[in-house]
Image: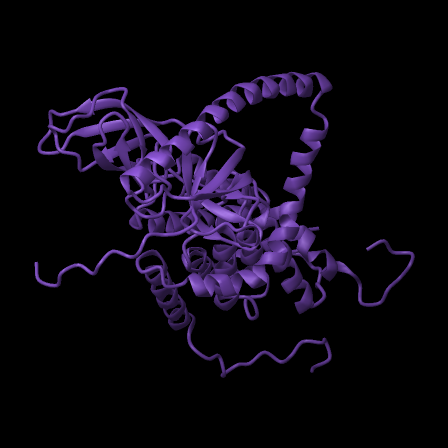
Amino acid sequence: MQPTNRSSRILLPVKLWFVYLSLIVALGLEYIPTGRAPGIPDWVALVLAIWCVREPQRIGMGAGFVLGLLVDVGQGAAMGQHALAYVVLAYLANGAARRVMWFPLWQQALHFLPLFLLTQALMLVVRLLAGAEFPGWSYFLSSLSSTALWAPLSMLLLLPQYQPVDRDDNRPI
Amino acid sequence: MSLVGHKTPPIFKRGLTPVARLSVFVAICLVLLVADLRFRYLEVVRNALSVVTYPLQMAAAKPADFVRNASRYFATLVEVQLENAELRRDHLTTGERLLRFELLEKENAELRGLLGMSQRIDVKSVAADILYNAPDPFARKVILDRGAQQGVEAGLAVIDAKGVVGQVTRVHPVQSEVTLLTDRNQSIPVSVLRNGVRGVLFGTGRGRLEMRFVLADADIREGDRLVTSGLDGIFVPGLPVADVTMVDRSSDAFARIDCEPLADIDTSVQVLVIGRTAYPPPPPAPDQER
């Protein structure tokens, strides 16, 4: 069953510590040194976008700004480069939250492909203006893999909210 | 708290509108970017924040370490034996050269003493391994496994067995970041080994180097060896850097000089961080009136 507004299922309220934990785990995944392998998804952008859609009241531009700065420091990128991109992503994702929730997961992912591309393009423009070299078109593969991971990761992050209020040992979920 | 466990959502108190919040954040980000990229003010902030990110980074580097060590573990015995034999051969030849070098150095010191010239610069060095490429896709940088605790400082030169690889640009406690010569924002002062003509070598970002601001009638030929001049007061003089591959004098006042780096910049694994033990006194302030 899809956890959309169309589904008749009512999810449990999210636990805030779980949201923050997932964002920190995403930050850890972002820090894994993968060298110059193309198409590594932008974990922080992905998880941030998912929570911006699911919890627009709690996760938004502030979280994007802080996470962006931490990614900048960890990756040795220009200070504010990821912060700027994630703030814009969070703003657009928060705005799209009400509309996007009506679609099934794979269509939600299609909504977010242009947003991820925009996030990367912003970083590219900032660095090109600062005199860096163009990293090649394979740089944008990262957005595609992020989009591909949208549905499975959304399901994974919503799993804790699927638990029933009254536990019943004879019922699996 | 209401019955379902939600806080009652605020209806009227929403704070700033989203667009206003966005503009505030974007303004902050732009200020940060300009302060960092243009004026390099934010190294202190970066160091402070890296205290937070450092444990997470160390934890995240573990899988990469594991993969690297595993591949090393499964290297076959034959490969290791072959490599060992080759290293022994190299060791013998370099040992012989080193003996001669020591003799020459002593002779040089005596001659300099006779002439009353100051002694050549003393050199300190730290051996290091290149761990991985830096994750920032816009710059050509690598991460070394030695940092401030092992005596690495920002500004030191990094060389491999053949020549200069790059320069240390940022130092963490147990790691450091090296900007490769081929990065577009990297430059290195060099002189031609044959006749001492000086110039500055810039990275082009495409794996090549370019010597800029050399007059068209300067005595530089294809095949010339370029070494560090040490005039910057940071690099050790005399390290081999690049060979001249193409000289084009057809354009205006300056010659276009393409060079190829000597070091295996993209493939070397073991490197030496090398620097002076003492820096020369700072240059006098430039005249105010020009």
